[in-house]
Length: 181
Image (cartoon, rainbow, N blue to C red; front, top):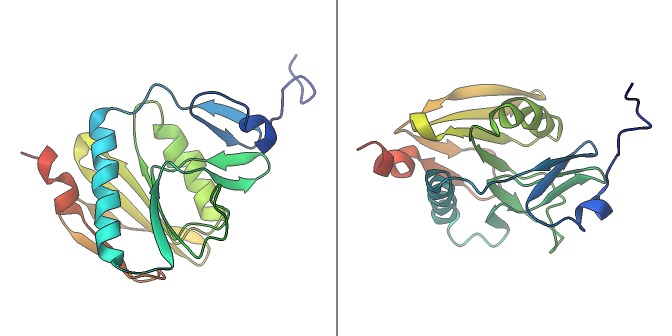
């Protein structure tokens, strides 16, 4: 019989020693292998580019991809793309990002749609976007009264984020156009 004493509980110090690409959720290690498919990486780059272009010369915010977000000593996530503002740390993200983007893959769907959704909501990330590469669709959520409210499914529309330090937007037509031909 498995009990709490027989299951290892890992911390950020353990995480730092691991080789490869990992996340840590409530002390449980999650391997992030193999590397994402080319379309996944291309969509992440296009979203990153859209956000970078939209925030312009804003010197308070950064757009990053696959950067460690240390939520607690036993939870470290690596979102596909984030918009962070006024971050005091150079090693990893410590403050809740203003925009979090996850791009679904077959191996990450449940984790992104359920577990990370709940974590990002509880950490009060103002915006969470889940991108579905096969459908060229993005589901966009906005935090309202402590819960995510779906803003819609986006295919070719532009979304202006109203609650970000630097005014950001994503034109989803630019993101998906190469893959809808």
